[in-house]
Image 1 (cartoon, rainbow, N blue to C red):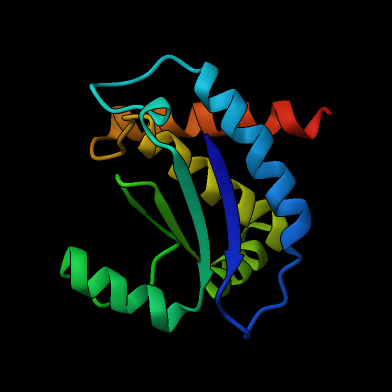
Image 2 (cartoon, rainbow, N blue to C red):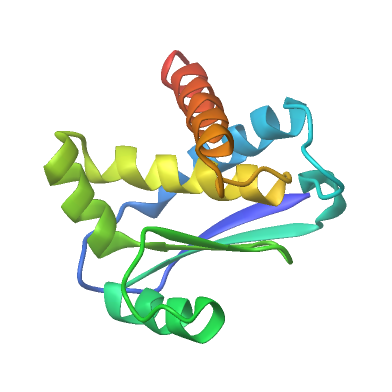
Amino acid sequence: MAIAVFNRQRGVRVNVAPLQSFAESALKICLETPRQGSEGLATLRQIDVVIVSDRRIAEIHRRYLNDGTPTDVITFQHGEIVVSAQTAKRQARNFGTTLEDELRLYLVHGLLHLHGYNDKTRKDAAEMRRLQDRVVAKLDDR
């Protein structure tokens, strides 16, 4: 299985190389996490993480989820994770983190969705946050 990170926007400067390295390590950890439901990362051959603008993610959000507002991350079960660099930059400012931290979090969130986790209920969202934090913390320790 392979994972690739693509920067398809120009508004926010993103250093793809460290994010690619993080994605490869995060994928390995997520694969070791017990799967939720019938879906799972192991069923995919390729995962693409695509970094886009707020305008582009709002178009995708409207087209597939009937909501024309920008969002942080949208995951497609065929193996595509779309993240907004502008939203990540805004959220980094709001939460006192970095752009890279936010992008890493979105990436792990998408991987967990691909592994069958969802955040539709408060309980499920809390479980995903716990797992996200654990994966990111594990990689930060390296």
